[in-house]
Length: 125
Image 1 (cartoon, rainbow, N blue to C red):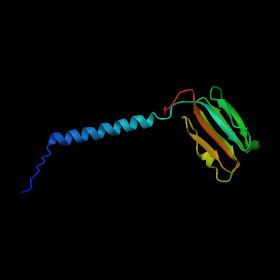
Image 2: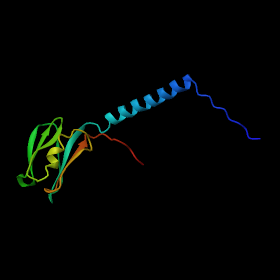
Image 3: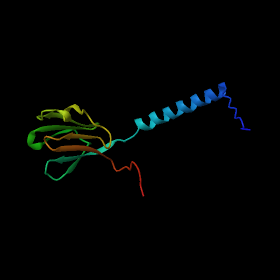
């Protein structure tokens, strides 16, 4: 004789399941929207030149790749204003504002990355 298992699903179970799903979605949206943190400086790799960093505390324009790229640094972020590369991917990237975001121009060999202001995103050990 096989035991029979009876499972009843009532309205309370349905409401509880719906609440759990909505709570999980709300938490996921909250954490995804706050990921990254504010950037404190911009790291620039310009071709074969040594990488260097600039702070985001003062607005300025920087010429990269021997004048082929104009990078605009503002307090809120960084964007490429002008580039003479054919695909314009670096210009279309738009303004980056969060730690870890990057702008890459392969034809001119330029990589611009935002870095944190001395804060840790995670600790591994």
